[in-house]
Length: 550
Image (cartoon, rainbow, N blue to C red; front, side, top):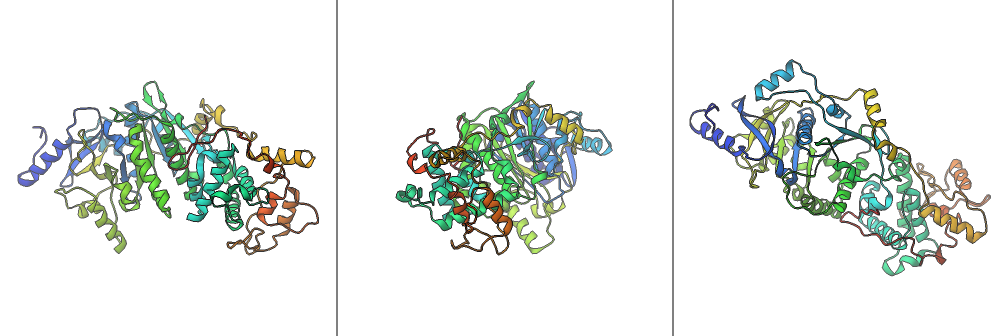
C-alpha cells in the first residue's frame, strides 16, 4: 500500500492494503472512484478497471435512483477519451447531455474533492439515433430478413411451435431469394405457404398449418397497429456505424428509447438485433489492448423476461463469443437475479449500486446478490443497503484476468452534462449529422411483396396494383381471422370489410379469413410456376437467425 494512504489499524489495515494492491494496474485503465472505508472516501486509494478487460463484459445494477445512469455516463466518457466507441441505450432520454461539457457546481466540486478527481468539463463526440425515427435521432431500421425468425418470434410473443413454423417461412424465403424487407413481405409469404398453390412447398419439411399461419398473421396485425411498421424497412442501419471514432475519440452512439419505452419487448429485442448483427459481421480479433466497442444493454431484464430456452441459449452463446470480436457488453438492470446464471457467469466486471430491502422479496434478492460476489471483509448485506447515490460495490477483472477484491466505492462525477440536451440543440445535432441523409428517408423498393404482386398481375392479365395491405386488426370478439384453434372468430366489422374490399377483395363476396384476404388478392396466382427461380443467393444466418446481405 502506498505510504500516502492512511492505514487503519489491525485487520482493517490489512484489508485496505489488499484492496489497494488489487487495483494497482500498470496499463491503461478507467478511474471509477475512491475506496470507501468506514463511511469515508480514501482518495489516495483509486478503484479502477483495466481498459483491456472491458471486452470481458460487465454488469451495472442497483435500485432506481441510485446512480446507474451517471455510472454509465462516467464509464462512457472515459472510454471515448481512450478512443473506444460506445453504444448507449437512452431509455429515459436523459443521457444526451454527454455530448456537451458539464456544469461546475457545489455538488460536483465536493464530489471531486472527496474522490481525488481533477474534474474538468468536457463533452464527447456523439451520434443520436431513434428506432424507426420515432423520437430525436437518425432513424434505425432493420429489414425483416436480417432481423430473423428468432428475434421476430420474441417480439410477436409466439410460442415454441409457432417460432419453429416462422423459421420455416424464413427458410423458404431465403432459399427462393424472396427478400423480406418489411412486414407486408412477410405477410405475403406466410399467406402463400398455406394457399392451394404454396401448401406443397413446405410439405417435405413439416409444412405450415392454416391455424399457425393465422396466429402469425394476427400477431403481425397487432404488431403493426402498435406502429411497428416504422421499425422495419430500408435503408437498413449498418451496425458498423457504431464503431466510429472522431479525431482520436470514440464516438458515443445514443439510441433514444423514451418515445418507445412503452414497448419494452420491441426495443429490448431490437437492441439484441444490433448486438447479434455486430457478432455476425465482425471478424475474430482475440484479446486486444482495448475493445473495438463497448455496448451498454440498458433495462436488460426486459430481454430475458418470458424468453424461450432457445432464445436464452442464443443470448448466452452470443455473449460468450462476441468477446473474441473485440466487443464488450455491459448489462444494466436492478439486481443480478434479473440476468440468467449462464450469462451472469460471463460478466467479470461488476458495479453494484444500492439495493433496497423493504419487503421479503427485496431481502431475498439482496441475499442472492451478496452470494454473487467473491469473499470480502465487508458485511455486504449491510453495505449494499447503506450505499448512497453515486456509491457502489465494485469488483472487476485484473490485468491477468483474476477478480479484484470487492471494494465499496464512491464514484467520480461525470465531466459531461448530467441531464438531457436542449431539444433544439439535439435536433440540430441530428439533422447536421453526416448519417442523416443516408438514413432519414424510408425507401420502399421492390421486394418479395411487389415481385409477387407483379407476377400475379401478369398471370391474371390485369394491371399491377398495390396488392393486399395489412389485414384488419383484431377487434374484441369480432376479428375476421381464424381464432387460436384455426377457426374463424367472427365476420369482422363493417370497416374491416370495407378495408378488405379496398385491398382487392371482390365486391359482394363474403368476408374471407385473414389468410384468404392475402391469398385471394391474385398476388400468388403465378407464384407456383416460378418458385424454382432464384432471385438471390440463399442467406446464411447466425445464432439468432439474423442475416445480412451486403
